[in-house]
Image (cartoon, rainbow over all chains, first blue to last red; front, side):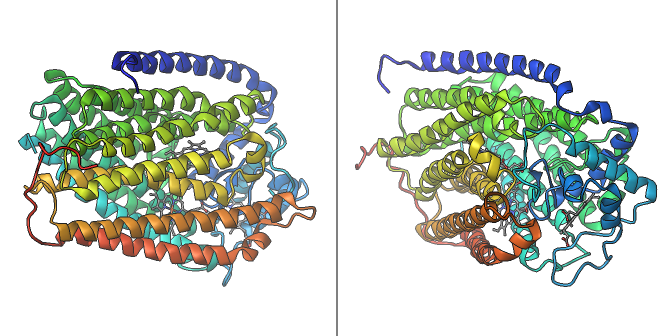
Length: 144
Length: 466
Ligand code: HEM
Ligand code: HEM
């Protein structure tokens, strides 16, 4: 870098540039939060769904699964599992409920969480609510 | 070592390396679970191993950053550390809190841990990388505040250089952004949106400031190049990092329910994010080529150059690979992501911590550099780990491309589990590369115990040989 370009100039680019883009980010964030009600399916965000989300977190489902493509890559994507299971919450509940406590020999296994029926309902409703968020048509197909 | 108090960095570095070993062991457990699904099930389910692996990574890198700051700030400020006692106290608090959290993950089911730690009062658990119980998160905030107070006071009472300014901004940013981990609304879209304010604005934002500052410090010391030149580079690198990285966050807002304009903003700005990483590589190589002294610590120079190159490959090249929204549509949340995550984290943050350790540990142990023999062993560790990481990345990329093809792109898409079976060979190879990585880490640790003739030459006055 040449002599005419001084350290002070570099410093000013750093402070000025960063500050400018922080402000742009804040503006865009504000706009996004205003636009979200159109997309994030909040009309269906019931207490039951909120309970489902808490169960989702407190059992660390994200430690094996992805949800909208974020999480771990060990087990199937679940943002569209409601669609994959034929829009059938009963099938989701039956799947979670039927996991053998000692796993399936030789196969990647999902734990048996011993959920109550109420908890299973909440989790299934949560997965249904997530599947109805407008996430720009992701994933590309039903396999997730 | 110019100031006695710099030596508080030593326990931080030792803890960092110890936790690094733990991280790799759990990585290998998971690598095996990928191909032998029932391995250690149900004792250590995959998700538990993953939490341990990623949380140990974050904690040891944070230990590394703190150690680096405790070493660097007094020397830059030309004064003793404000309070070495506070630094040691925080070390033990952080270590014990970290260890208890890991033991908690392993000892009881996660839901039980959530209940025991009162997660319902302020639910923050169960999100990727932020799995720590809320109480641990509060502990992290306290340690971070005490740490920033300590180094901040040191800067205030001493000389203020560009390096310590950039480092301080990075550290304060790290602490402030972590506060978003306490925001966890019921609305999953908002939750995900602000989760990235911690994760993205850390690794592709403020951490790059910390990375740049540490690299600049080590380069000044080992090359003797004029501070003005080095600090000008540093400002340009961190300027580019934030100018591209802040809106680059848009590459995580493609498919989580956020408006579609993010596809354009995210693609454009994140496509520019490799620039600061490329500059870091140029920076390291240029400064070492223009060196004014022959510093006997060759290993530290190797780490500095390696860090530049690997950060550029992992973050820059592998990041660019999947950052444009039409590509990311297919690769999102696949093994391609894992490939990138590994090389980027290793190349940028693991390597910069090891670079600082390589430079400062010998000084804290009372010598300008390790013996030639010890440095040779350290360099073997460097190459074994780095080459293994290149292979891990290549195998995961292979797995990822096939996964995307079979599951998402072909005319007859197959189910996730069916596809995983077909690409198992790549996972076996990744595990093998992982074993070599562990061996490399062993060699690296062994280098600290290798004796040999003392190096005393510090021909500062000698003109550059090349
Ligand atoms: C050497 C042997 C290693 C093995 C076998 C290994 C294996 C794994 C596995 C299986 C995962 C989980 C992937 C998933 O979600 O399905 C993972 C995640 C991760 N590992 Fe490693 N790992 C190793 C070393 C490392 C190193 C050295 C680093 C960085 C310094 C690292 C950083 C990460 C990160 C950042 C993640 C989260 C990735 C993401 O969310 O995309 N790992 N690792
Ligand atoms: C040292 C800097 C970087 C580190 C440590 C890093 C690490 C990571 C990690 C761990 C993830 C996985 C997050 C998750 O689990 O969901 C990720 C995702 C991603 N990174 Fe980076 N990254 C860095 C820089 C970059 C750069 C410079 C780019 C772009 C050029 C980039 C592009 C991406 C993209 C597009 C994703 C999302 C992948 C997906 O859709 O699944 N990263 N990064």
